[in-house]
Image (cartoon, rainbow, N blue to C red):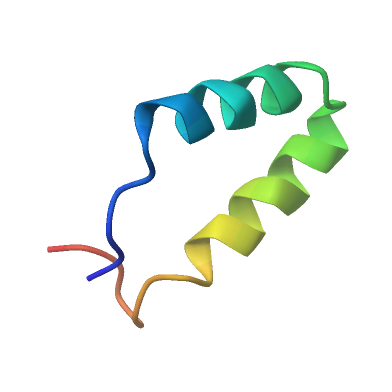
Length: 42
């Protein structure tokens, strides 16, 4: 399983995410989803 990001990194990621357009948010979410194995987290 992917280790969690540090609190500081998560804050920075959230700041960037909040500035993205809807299309770019979906692309970003897709990139993050690729880090997990097929079927996601159970």
